Length: 163
Ligand SMILES: [Zn+2]
Image (cartoon, rainbow, N blue to C red; front, top):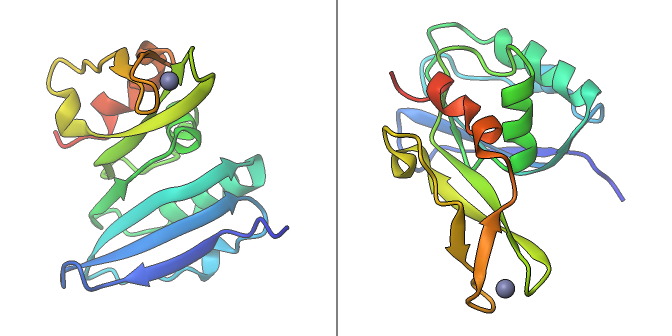
């Protein structure tokens, strides 16, 4: 099946911003350079639909995002785990003016043997940068445990949240 990432734009939410939605695998099949950005608007990147990022995709992404004007306001929403890992791992995956608004955190349920993700906002983590390591399972009600190492996973918080 096609793994091509789809990008589409919505403007209806706030006339001063443009939302770009990403859906699919961020890999070599996407020509990031073809994505044009209106420099007079705030840019919101909704990356909820990105399920995989490979090295070619990373290179294309970095080249594109680093080529955007440095005064452009960039907000990232609904960042999945695969995306957060890149942010933490790759220097320059996001420009320094970018802020991450919301992201997914995976939790594992021992009873159901499934990983479910929970959407969180940076505001929920709060100043102490603490996140619940245990939350109730939405299926069985048992306790699920966070499926990432918080010290590693939440590294992005201090870097890409509003100063
Ligand atoms: Zn469960």
